[in-house]
Image (cartoon, rainbow, N blue to C red):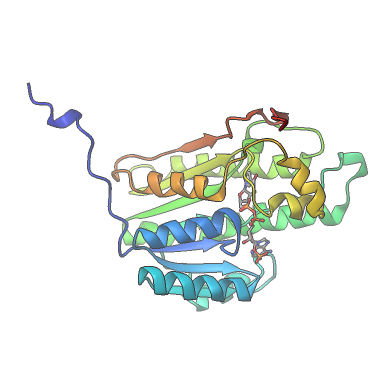
Length: 265
Ligand code: NAP
């Protein structure tokens, strides 16, 4: 018997590729920047906080010898797409559409229009528009990998999360449509849908460090590095393989609102 076809294929090398990452100044975006740089990927990083981008640029270029370009920009401001285009930020082999947020956890009846707008502007309008910019370029260059950060909230809706859940459901639908439209054209559309990851996300959502800390108390959430590792692994798969979606939760999280806490004696 010939066993060669059943043995593990070598992983695809990412070295020398270029990745655009939105929301690269913290959490999943920052961890992905670090792990992609470690894999030899040149980076184009976008976020609002300049000092963090500068520190990341200095660290990663020194440590891994990759080229790291940064763009300090608010993805919800008009003119940002032109700014990114002027900086050639849409020229990339890999795009990690990661910037996103939840704002508040009020019921619809008590919610604020400003919170809705923040989520819709970033999670939907900016994410969709960036995809619209990069997809034709990837198709023209004959290859590309588009990774979007969804959420388990894109599958399961919960009270107090109407707009956030709706935005992640919308992103999942968008990715599904795009995957169908581009099938067979060497463009991989990958959706990563995590449960609880300990990042600044919860602090941004609740506006309080103490309340955010309570969300992760006495349980082990996913870490940004856990998610980045899955992203790199998905990208390293042979090109004929499209990792459509990964739903990933902490072992202590049995569902959107089921979290097992282990009290310490
Ligand atoms: P995070 O630590 O708060 O990171 C969010 C990133 O987005 C930051 O780098 C932030 O940088 C950037 N950002 C926010 N608003 C922006 C704007 N207007 N323009 C440009 N950049 C902006 O949160 P995270 O957990 O890593 O979230 C990343 C993605 O994962 C999001 O799409 C989120 O919905 C998704 N997700 C998170 C979890 C979780 O439990 N953490 C679970 C499922 C899915 P600046 O503030 O410097 O701009």
